[in-house]
Image (cartoon, rainbow, N blue to C red):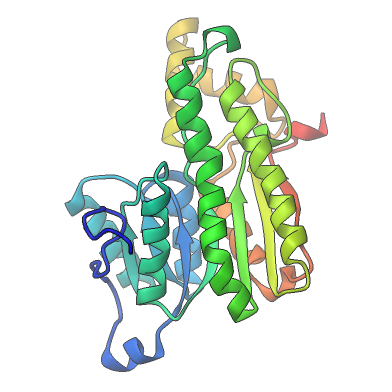
Length: 284
């Protein structure tokens, strides 16, 4: 039995958006997006909501701000939205998040594993605690969400799983041992799940973005500007020039649109793929 005292396992979350008696009876297909109170995850959630999915947001933040975020998303797109603060390092809380989704919606149609953290240091100086945390959130959490959501998806005979990996799931960079290892692992997990669910109405794919202007990347840019003694704009251009030939950042909205495509009938035969959205990074 899932513990009611866990923040991610409450059976009666706040529900925002259209939930008349008729709609509550009809229920809705939902999309779970981990790490979705900001950045890439929020961009994905917004695009999925615009496509008519009920949304399960996940992430930490101040309760009032998250409540407003949920209400705004519900009002804009006319769908039900709930929030789970489940800690992605905790398997029981992840299971509780899935239980919430199944309780509030007719079925889980889409699972997007987006939650991620970063830390940089040379391998010989990499803090063990940081390694463990990155592995837990960036890789092991996806294993727990997938293993928990697959039984109801298999029972329904349909489902879409999208893992937001990174270009670092395909290539490496210095001082990112844990991140690169976790993202490579996530691409491998994607392929195994795709094989195990092939022909059963479920697809599993990974999206591997290059540089996206998220708070995580903005911090790296700010650190780079300080180290180089340059402006933020100069640091941005230097970062892009090193790896991303397009000279432009990938946007969260572009990634969200790709998730919507992967969730559509047009992508029924697209599974087990690691799709690079990288402005030409891996073409070099």
